[in-house]
Image 1 (tube, rainbow, N blue to C red):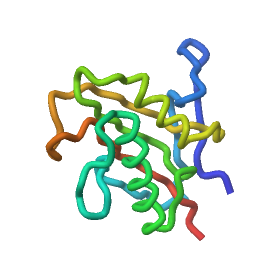
Image 2 (tube, rainbow, N blue to C red; image 1 turned 60 degrees about the vertical axis):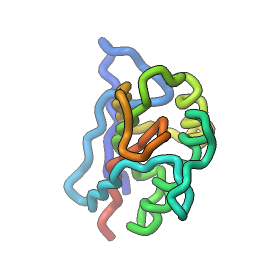
Image 3 (cartoon, rainbow, N blue to C red; image 1 turned 180 degrees about the horizontal axis):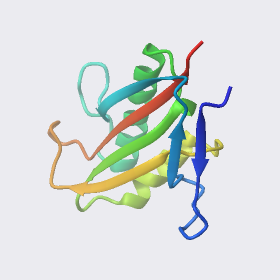
Length: 134
């Protein structure tokens, strides 16, 4: 069952990494995953660069989604915060490794920030997912 419609208006840029608009049908459970940093299960940062931390952030996010009965394919909206001065492109490349060409990419917001709550964290990823109601 398709619960989301992915819309890219013709007058806006089309990008394989994100969709401009995602409409979710009423027959879905909505899951909100709070910001995930590149930390391991003990809370220690994994990697000193934005790419390594992005990979770990996404692994943590996928763990959260699975705990709620969802998967990365159910994500309809990402918010990605990157510490100012870090390479957005390196973070994006790591993100694309994880997304791996799946169809229907979510809507996305990327923002540069002065800092994050976890000391030394360079990236934080949050997500909204929509799972079909059984």
